[in-house]
Amino acid sequence: MRLVRENAQRDELLEPFEAYLRDRGAELFEPGTPLTVGRGPARVDCMGGIADYSGSVVFEGPLRHAAVVAFQPRDDTLLRARSATFQAEGRPCDVQVDLADLRDGGRLKPYGELRTLLTADAQSAWAAYVLGVLPVLEREEGVRFERGGTFLLWSDIPIGVGVASSAAV
Image 1 (cartoon, rainbow, N blue to C red):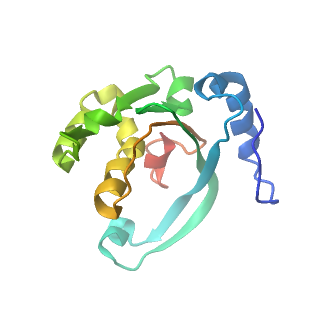
Image 2: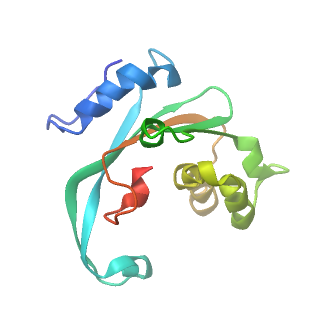
């Protein structure tokens, strides 16, 4: 499997991600169907803490550590997420949810019910960080998801040390 880079800049983090994808992640994806890959850096918080969530001024800077996600749409309504970090630690790393489970009578369930659904199993609650974005986009931005997708998360951000470590799933 080969990642197509539209950005000519070489990202050293993508090399181990590509190796993981070849060695352990390829069975997740349909061969010949493009993957969309995104990268988000860890960050150091020098001032402001989580005050940015309420519109306050903060002073943060990116670190070389980052989280990478690969996404591929599916032909069915299944949402599948895998954490390479948790797989490497021998923890539960695969989560599957059907889009139909996010709805009641065709309408998106209330956020409280969605949170309960996505965090019911403490071992797989990490997937709420990823899959929980879809109902928010649907409710707040009017994006309707009719088909599922597969997400592969890979990170070299240490878990539980700040620096945006919630992205380290």
